[in-house]
Amino acid sequence: MTYDLVIGDRAYSSWSLRGWLFFDAFGIPVKLHRARLYTDELPTLLKQFHPAKTAPTMRTPDGVVVPETIAIAEELASRHPEAGLWPADPKARAIARVVSAEMHAGFSALRSYCPMNLRVSYADCQPPADVLADLARLELIWAWARNETASTTAWLCGDYSAADAFFAPVATRIATYNLPVGPEAIAYVQAHLAHPSFRRWRAMGMVDGADQEFYRRDYPRRDWPGPTPLPARAVDGTEAENAACPYSGGPVTHVLELHGRRFGFCNAFCRDKAVADPEAWPAFMAIYQS
Ligand SMILES: N[C@@H](CCC(=O)N[C@@H](CS)C(=O)NCC(=O)O)C(=O)O
Image 1 (cartoon, rainbow, N blue to C red):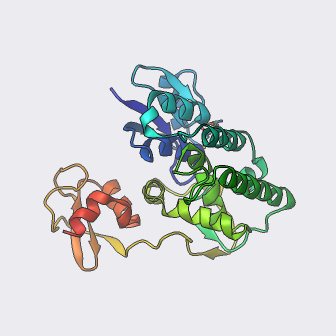
Image 2 (cartoon, helix red, strand yellow):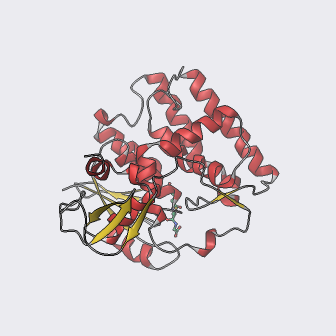
């Protein structure tokens, strides 16, 4: 028995990203159930998770249904104290909880004007005053958390904690919409974009279904400001250096090419998420570097 987690489209579902980071970034195994937003997939799937209405929703190995991101974080932290979702130091832990709670309840102007979209980056979105006010508040509480906890890492309260997972989607909004923030906040955004779990989520989000029209904006585009992926591409055929898929060990059915070399995978999604960001996948990089 393991945890189950209902998620929405990876490119767009900011709350799903948070819920998933509580597992992936803290080494807790989970089985995912993905439903496409703006279809009946999510309500249909959630019938098995009564009384949940939103993604993410977790089911614990003993069968308790836990929707609401903050409840998922708290429940996992209680059940897995060794995973370090909250800082061990009492003051840092309190501060991590404060900023997470404010994130869970607030920043509605930023969230509605700049919905998360991991597939694009815009040069400018002309943020209105209420969005700028949300950004100012974010910069204030991020600096406060860092100062109060004397954090010497890239993160808010020492080591990466659930508080940082709560702000990962906000960091991506700053990246996607090129929002005006100071150098400390930009450094924090860059740390998120380079975080291994986040890179894996975004790589999957790049290939996780068609674009959702609701998130389309006509702002001028720029390149994604995170790490530049290695130049892989999907190719036809099944001929590859490796006989078995690096993730499942299954037979090769889909192939990518990287720097003139061919590597195989057991299905299109596994291949395409590696094409999107090869370095995000340690099992793939192990065969690439061997
Ligand atoms: N307060 C909830 C918000 C979750 C939420 O709004 N999730 C969105 C996807 S990002 C959703 O499920 N939307 C579908 C709907 O509301 O019907 C939480 O903290 O988990």
